[in-house]
Structure formats: C-alpha cells, structure tokens
Length: 405
Image 1: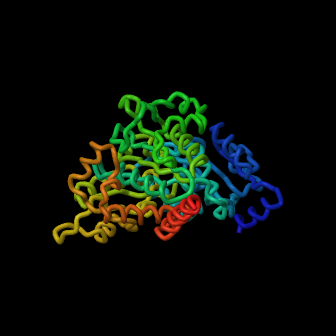
Image 2 (image 1 turned 135 degrees about the vertical axis):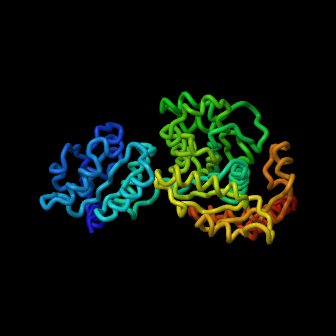
Image 3 (image 1 turned 45 degrees about the vertical axis):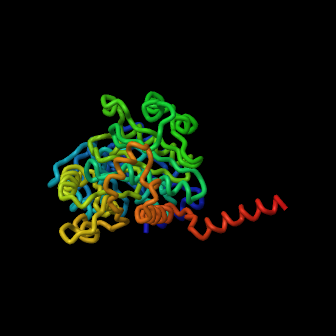
C-alpha cells in the first residue's frame, strides 16, 4: 500500500521520505542523486517521523537492537520499508537466521560487497517495483569452475548477437585473470590501458571504446587484465562504474566474469544484472566446485541459484553420464542451453584466435543462435531471424540489378 501511494505522490512531483542511519557520505549522496527521495540522516529510530523508507547500517545499530526496537509497543515503525545493510561477512548460520527473522519483520537484508550504486539499486527495486530497470541490457556469464569454456560461450554469443541485432555490442572480459582472447589483437589495449582513469573515476565512454578491439563493425571487445599482480587493485566499485558506462553506450553488454569469485571483477559483474548464466560441464568436479562457491560465498552475498540460468557446455550425449535435464535438476536451475562438445576444435580455435562459430559446425552454431535469441528477448531487442536475413539479401541483390539496368 505504501509503495503504491508513494508512486502516486511521485507523479505529482513529491519525493518519498527516506531516513538513513549511516555515516557513509557516498551513500548519502547516491541516494539524493536518484531524485526519488527526500533524505534525512537519523541517529535514533525515534527520528523517523513520517518516513516511508528506512535504511540502517549494521555499523550504527546491531540487528538485535533493531529487532527489539521493532518489537516494542512504542515503536514508531509500522508499515515502512526497512533495509538493513551488512558491511561484512557473517557465518552461514547467522546469515540464515537474519534472513528468517527479517522476513517476519518485513526487513530487507542488503548483503556486503555491494558497491554504493548497487545498494541504491536494491533499495530502488524494492521500493519502486514498477520502475524501468536501468541495467536490463547487461548479461553476465560465470563459470562454475576453470576450463568450462565461459569465455568461448560469452564471446560466441556476443558475436552472434552482433550479427543479428541492430546496434553495437560490448564484450567485457572480466574473468580476473589472463585468459584466451578469440581475436587477433592489433595492439596492446584493454582493461590495463584504462586502469588509472577507471580507479580515479574519470574514465569516459569514448576512452572505454578506444580501449576495445573492434570486430565486424558492431562488436567491441575489452581485453581483460594481463598483469596478475594488478588484479587485487580492482575493487567492485571500479568495475561497477565500467559496466555502467558500457550499459549506457552499447545496445547489449556481455560480460565474461570467469570463475574466480575471489576477484572484485567477478563479484561486480555478477551483482551488475539480474540476467546471469552459469556455465557448467557434465563433470562431477565442476558441480563440487560450484557447491563450494555457493556455500562459502554466494549464500553470504544472497546470490541464489535461481538467479542464474544454466548452460551445459561441452555436452556429450551418453547413458553413462548425466543428461542436460539431470544436470539442471542437480543445480536447481532453469536450463538455457546445452552446447555440443567439439573435441579438439576448441584447441584449434585458441590457436586461430577465432570462436567456434567459424568452423561451420551446424549443431554448435544453432545452439549459440538459440541462446542469443533468448538473450535478445531478455533485453527486449528484436532478433533478426533467418527469413528477415534472406529478405535483406534479396533486397540488396535486386537493388544492385536495378542499378545495372
């Protein structure tokens, strides 16, 4: 009821009142910049006055204090939306307890390791669910383990999209470690080239584009980190700004987030969008590694398995190993695609600096095309189907003939 009322208020130019209990000046400024809220800084819950939204940091009030304050008969908090910010990791048992208790008191827990803009986005999503998403054109691929083929899948999909939608595509290689780039680089440019400007928050969209390798006129590829020692210097807020710049400039942004969840690059990439794909294989070691990531990191960051769609890569049809459906059931995810294993062609593609799309394997190309169509529908962009392609070719042919006559 409160949210619907607030949306009506906004239509007549009145902002929703938000009380913030935090000394984080960057968060204060970010909330004000949205233009959606009338912000007030509070030290006690008695100061909430007529606020419809309350944001509280665990640095200013412990969860037990908050819980008891809400339970008090004299509490001024009735139907307000409450957000509780965690600034550091808690153990799994405590996290589960916090989430369970919070659901009873209508408190939304905001996990640690989010950038300021991502915190604000979480608040906005909950407060204004009908608001248009600002980052719906971002797609992130994350690998359940090393060598599952995340970069190849991401690059192939970006390449397929660049040929079948109108507008430019960005492919950001943010795996957090030097990896194979399936293009022949003309010069040494990439993420390392813009590091200083990115970290000082002065990078422009034009400079980002200049640091990309251009492929087929519509695909812009930002090569990743080459210096292993530099990886630790990239924090989630740096990469979040990079992704936001790309999202504003390109029609679709495809991110290869690698499989290194310890990296600030990967964490930022996973938190950047709701459109996430987990790349796996049928190997048992891959599933075991994912279970470790899920149990030790994802749950603490409140990243759920249901946040991902599943891609089974290097797929082999055999009665002796799990089928694609069985793999999806084991991961408890929706199956998006299962991409055939092409044996040694992957090695050849690395040597040739090409994606597997260039080897005329029809099952592989069809699967990548279907995956690209799914992504196009997620970001609400028309996908040029084969009939439209043929019509376009015929039009060009007839216009050429007409010019000769």
